[in-house]
Length: 190
Image 1 (tube, rainbow, N blue to C red):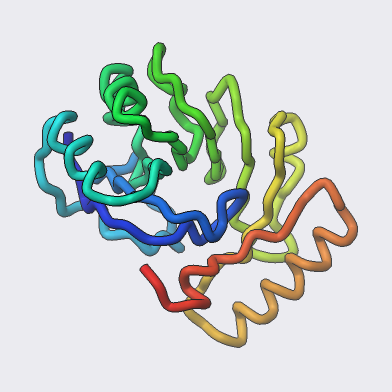
Image 2: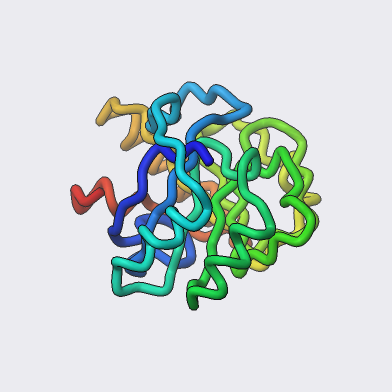
């Protein structure tokens, strides 16, 4: 498997914000989002067993599989090995690929990026909001347990303030959505 990095930190976004987690960042993605803040072109080849062993050196059960786009590489055997090691497995995916059959993920966070979502089950729908004018109607048919709207980080302080204001306005008018902030960036933690 092509792994960009494995690290231990706090989950900074969504339902599990503040939860200690081991992040397994897979290299490669099928999308090229302009606002992506991940360099997922560099990687180290690792076996499933090597990855599980690496996660076991940290005191948490919570694993976050992310990318890039992890559905391009995960396998049922990898997820089963994480579960056998006592891990709780969360995936963060853009949803453009179905989860491989037999991948028993505990929590599915889907953050769609303007492409059709092919997931059969979504626990948390997390949309990056770029501000007024973004077509939110495309998410109306997606069923999830939770709906989160996350202001896009443009790296421009003034633009970010405006997007945050627009995000809050949208949520107040559409209360099915909850605010998701990138608290790891606010706190300056990895």
